Amino acid sequence: MFEIRNTMNGKFYWRFKAINGELVATSEVYETKQDCKNGIDCIMSNAVFAAIRDQTV
Image (cartoon, rainbow, N blue to C red):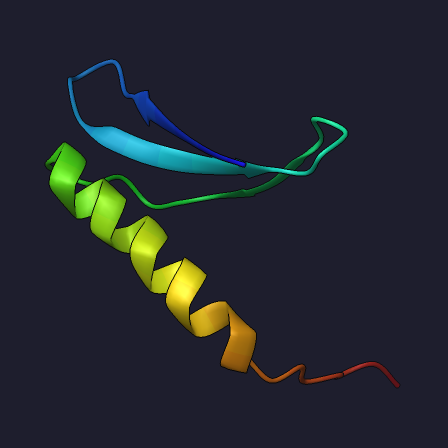
């Protein structure tokens, strides 16, 4: 689930949590709530196509 949250100075960021409530990812800070929602939309629409780059040895 995505959560939209406020910063102390009135800006916005999102957090992505797993079903068990564990925090998986946190976004950059956005100036507006709409920009934050657009960031979520971008992740949701593009994550399906994301490649995995394994850089382990």
